[in-house]
Image (cartoon, rainbow, N blue to C red; front, side, top):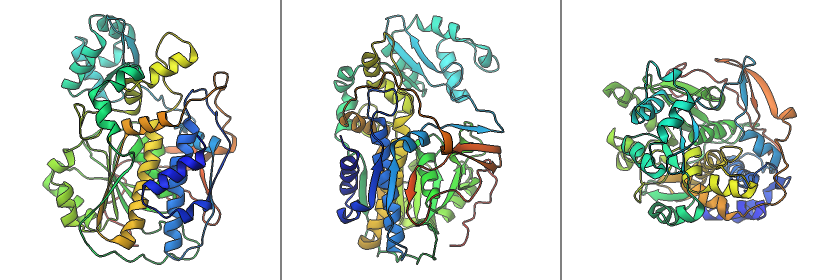
Length: 466
């Protein structure tokens, strides 16, 4: 499917004016990566829609009309997650993460990048967790899983609040009740709430990026949400990343925090919740990836948010959505790929016996760009229709969309395209950071990150002046 057609469909499904679409163009062509799926198309289309929305916001604020473009290879590079700190490239996965065969000859994928998830899986398998968890070898995990059937272990892990997925084919997934619930969801849910009057755009200073002065509260940690916040920061938004001082982070926070303020707020305390309320009153966008219902349990449900800020754009990410038997289930890109058939289908395409992961976290990055697009589409519509807005994206529904883009030929012999000038080096609070530049190109106001990436808690939880 042509990427321009895919992007136009996204644009119009968000209720935006198709007259802007000629400003958006694309370079390169599929296949770019060794995959049977149209990964570059998904990334280009979702990022292109986000970039065009930013250009339209800038124009609505008195800025220039801009041409926007996204190259296929550039989009793939950005979605690679490639980065290093002081010349060291952190490992993407915990040593115990990945694919295992079970006793029924099925497979499961474990996600153990967080210590509590790793130790929970080890306890379920009867293996030692902390302090001995780091010494547990993959062979011991593989042996323990021989006593389990794949689907039974997936369910036992879910019942324990852990993150595990059994490998399914597309046919098996499509017969699952959760697949039907996901198919009934829109790819990008955008809904107006309330009748508040439209806020006026703040005029854009000459030469400023389109989102300058737009305030985004980023309550996300892995990976699609942080990508969305980073994308909005590249277009000039004041993005405030909120972490709890009690929660761990993966090392990718150094790369996904580019352009953001980084604060600590403990929502388990009354003082922390009051701090968040103050930030929300002055925010334009809330970006959050809590499990469905979890933020409401802390006093920040849709009704409460609307009372705090009658024109807030609230953007939510989940793994599987809120409905169906898996509504609210924890999940990450790699596990959604596994559960919903991608790993099985990719193995068939390559003619290999074991399930094969996609070469990048395409669901995370596509969903992240869709979140950024949805936030900006809601801001554009808020300016004319008023009200508060709710935007929703799920990883599993993003996967169904990727399937709809068709399958490729001529991919098997490809490798990763050389990064070359795609990498840039900059100072950060974590050390010297080398990472991939933003993939979208603007004709007048180049995107980029003016704030260096900083460790969680480096800034005070106070908005900068507009």
